[in-house]
Length: 550
Image (cartoon, rainbow, N blue to C red; front, side, top):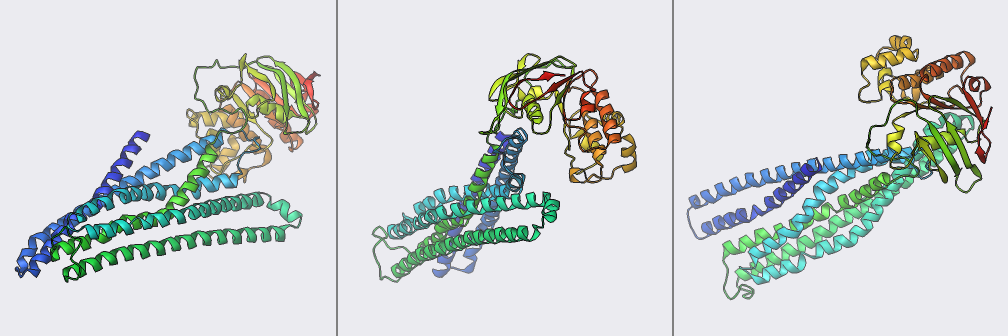
């Protein structure tokens, strides 16, 4: 697909390059017709040139439209690829990574800022090629008639890209600053919306509103800086192009009047030749003006590309995004932790040489109070965090960056608050996975005791973050996802009954144990009743070297 996009991009460039060159025969026909009329020939002598000009005009418009369409499609395909790479990198990045970009910033880059890539690729690249080729071709047409006119064009034309380059350095810095400010503002707004209830309870609404207003004013100021630079660049290009055309026009007029007799290779040129050169003079500057007008697209596009590349950069932790390289035997795997060491930043060690063996199909509870490292240990087993020492083995295969994605395909995770996407109940069970069809979804809903809820809701959508569902229903939805994932032989459950009442907790526990039959279950909890239902209880303590069985 990328090869096809490259071919479309090259074809678009060639067509947009050929379109302005059609003006050369058009200008020649127009100059010939005017010269013939000036030599007292009948008006009918201009009919054929006029017909040729019209036909060439249609050809030029068609070439330019087709080239622009191909360039736009190629640019859009490239943006789709870049977005997919950035989204894939974000999806495979550990949620525990401290350098993970804020969700508001990532959303801003992928949606708003990324759109600047399209005009950069669709407009600036063709404009740059036309500015490199077309003025030289036109100069080659002018020089055989008058070296003086060609010299004037040769001296004035380079001034436009020179000043555009100087202005462009400032434009790129201003565009990058604007995009950073926009991403920061989006991230700030999204974080405050998520914590709106807390902000209200602490009486910080006015302070948050003032901060938001200050950030919005800062973004407005940076946007105005970008606009000022854009207007400045437009004024510069108009000035130099007008000066260049005026100098050529003045020379041609004075030469036709006999005031200037040099510059024509020792022979005089007539009205037709002079008009031909005068018609080509603005066309010499036109690609340069187009390049200058697209210079802001270049600055914004390069800033957007840099932002997408930062999102697509490899993340922290053992995550992996490899495709399955070999078929892994399904069923309940054995899990072995060998001398694991881990600490958060420069803090105290959470684990120091921690070792644990879990047999296939065994149900194990990691029992400890909050903050003792239960969730961290589950993250290490899932490959969402990289240990400082030791290793994790799943069926005697080490969990590494290369094998993490493949081994994680055998795992299922159930958290305290599973994320619920905006959409239907069925869509939240399938999650767009291949093979999870309607019968599988129906069976999963029955297994999680959500079939009555599904029948009651019908196609009604669920709000983002599970709005419309109770806490117990959200947990049962997580169980339905597990039921629709038969290849998951290892279940990692992180406080699945926390914040639930006794009745709902018992229902979720029974559902989890029923689905865990024949699978390995590692459950983090500080609930003694839930821990007692496991085959083995491992008590954790900070800096532990091994779990203490209870």
